[in-house]
Image (tube, rainbow, N blue to C red; front, side):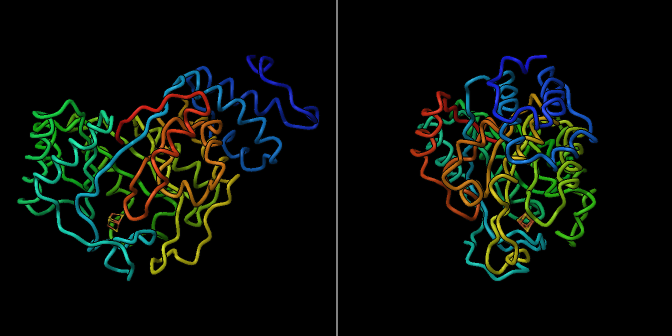
Length: 344
Ligand code: SF4
């Protein structure tokens, strides 16, 4: 039992400390808590959550140390997507103010990569809207950009290009691509409430294709889309079973005009509870807090690290602007942690 070394809290006797200690001790050994244990997290009081966060902070520190990864991406193609993901401002099903532009040319993508490297990045991620890059000319452009980035920089490369077929992923791997990012969006049992133009199985296949092509994978989802806590746990265990090196955690920022515009952002402590759930299910992977960070955690963003995350998406988010990168660095350094640039 490692818990005795943590700071004792007031009212500890009335809290379910044994339940929490058991979960933290399991995760500290690098093992996932059980699904039944995960469900019990939903009923923890705020005081019990504060006690849990001492443990999840310790798990983060055990497996990730003092480094905080800051992910950087370029949105190389935006808008006009034929899919109807109800959270997404880039879907052509909705009227939004999201920018629309075709895929950047090779020079623009390479220039963005070099700029990211000069800023301290060690990985660079190319993100494009759409079901997948079905236009051969677009695919060739990304392949050429990856070859140039590998030849002209020291950067590792990552792509988020949708439901890519296996043969295209193999071509990207051949060109030098290191990692593929693909969100499952939400739990299988909630998926048809969020997307109707493709299936949950299509999402899982995309991840499996990337793995079969020999790529590292980064797989996450979006929380706060009307799913239950049990469905959050369901998604966490599905992604654990798929096998991923990193998990981007997004919190819904309801955008006017989208299918989920009527929802409220997730309450702050529910967001922290969700991060802690993921750290306890996936103790040793990289957990990034990405979209919705400012809206949900507001001026208490530093708490995401004690809840268990070890990374953030910095700067410019896909369709919404993020916090000033200087404020992120300050926040991380004030916690005695080290910012490290990367991509997801
Ligand atoms: S999430 Fe991706 S696939 Fe879905 S509408 Fe947005 S850009 Fe299209």
